[in-house]
Image (cartoon, rainbow, N blue to C red):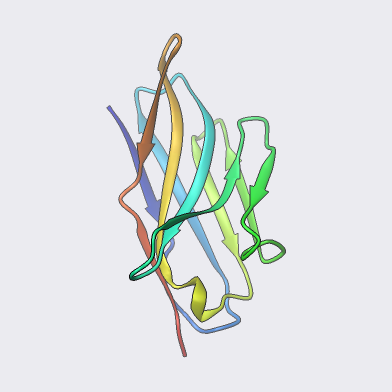
Length: 120
């Protein structure tokens, strides 16, 4: 079994910064794409940023220029640095990963989420 555990969320003032982490553990051969999603109250889950195993990144327009996604393939950890935070960034942030659990077997996993609240 594989677990994804997010951390780093919390309460921050507008204009502040946070760094979210997602640590994967368990039986892992490798991890392909890793993504951050978020879900605000009353809204659907949306993709925030993604990163391939080779380090190619993509961002939602809403966070582009304010956020940086990265990963440590050796430690199976993904990060999301978020700067210039706005109240509309308030949401539960989820980690998602395509984990190769054995030869030619890839399983998609979700973390439990971490709350980010941007408020003065």
